[in-house]
Amino acid sequence: MKPATAAKKLGIYLPATPQEFQDNDITRGGFNELQENPPEWLAELRRNGPHPRPVVAHKLGVSISGLARGGITDPLTTAEITALLQSPPDWLVAERSTMARVRAEEKRAKEARRAKD
View (cartoon, rainbow, N blue to C red):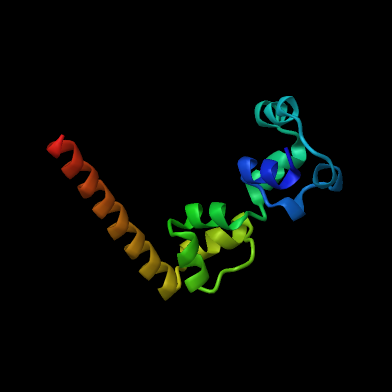
């Protein structure tokens, strides 16, 4: 698979990976090996970042669109994410509230479908 696909599936930011990873396609076996026995660089990226937007959004409890509305377009490190969570700006509080309402509505709709069936 292409390096970009592998990085996406691993939840890592491709430009932060070693050049060797970026330049070579990854076999299914190689990908499985990365998942089962991550090398130090992969463990470090997962631990400290920089993290891609989907991972940042998940850690902050907002949508990717919410990140964009909040002005976050670049990858963030774990320390930057922690700082945002410790002193949440107004946009983060609003986006987390929005996300909570969306999840509650999705849960309500799922329960309604289940009751109907």
